[in-house]
Picture 1 (cartoon, rainbow, N blue to C red):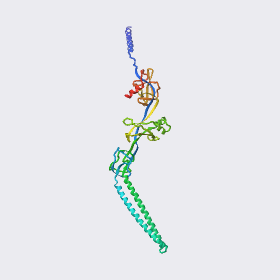
Picture 2 (cartoon, rainbow, N blue to C red):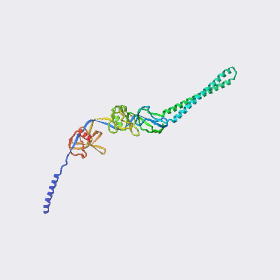
Picture 3 (cartoon, rainbow, N blue to C red):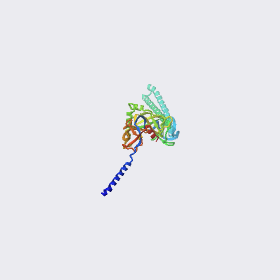
Picture 4 (cartoon, rainbow, N blue to C red):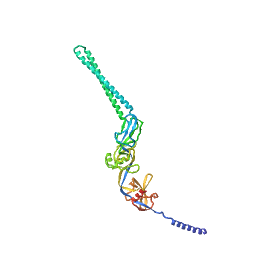
Length: 395
């Protein structure tokens, strides 16, 4: 009984201290969070795709005859006119061939004159024998022999004339080759890189041209779309045929390599009209004016095709997070949050255009969601969508 008297007070003291300890435990603090209301608005954005730029006309400059480059009369990057002399080839062999061809013409002319003389003599002989045969002074055989000689002489004249024509054609061909030694520009444009210089032997069979002349007064920007993008384009852009859809695409912007937008807007002109089986893509072409010559052959940029989402559901990008391929947000219900899955359609200027997962008027936590969990209580503080978007744009 004595031990019980000692133990009972100790138990009462322990119970009292335990209750005091529980009374001192702090309650979990409810944190304030900015909350926005899901809105519907028109969102303007762009399809952005890499593009390769080329002049509207790019002509390879190649020699029509083989020879050594004797003179280079222009420089890389120089503007030239159609027909302007660019290179001269050495013509020593052609000059020798021309001299030989002229001698052939002279020889052929002499052969014609000799053949004419033979024809004339044979004709005289025939004319002389005809009356003698008629008077039976000589036999008819002699006249026929003379006539045969006349035919042979005329045949010799025809051969001489043919030889003369052949010699003239050969001379003309040699002269054309001499002209081909002067290499001119095929179009108005800008000279590209030289692949051969003075002293180099060039030939029509060379794998690379001497240089290229590019007309860059206007340029083409080429871009490709994959099959999924093409189907989306065909199903969602106005028009019934591919040609109509291309024609109805609004003016296109070109973002340059330094991030600035080219001053001229382009027009979508055409496409290859079929998928490349090797790459699974289709190529499109946009035409831009290039009045100041800023764009050059071989430049790159980004094609920006305008598009608009009408009455689209939007939330700030900062209101979302991704996990295992899904996009989540925290929807506010009374003073707590629940995790929801949202299906994004696009991301534009710190906004997420939402396909599914929220409705207009829903409230979601706008930012600072890293520490939140499903079911956590918060102090919702309603803020405007623009305030959140602009803050993140500045950051």
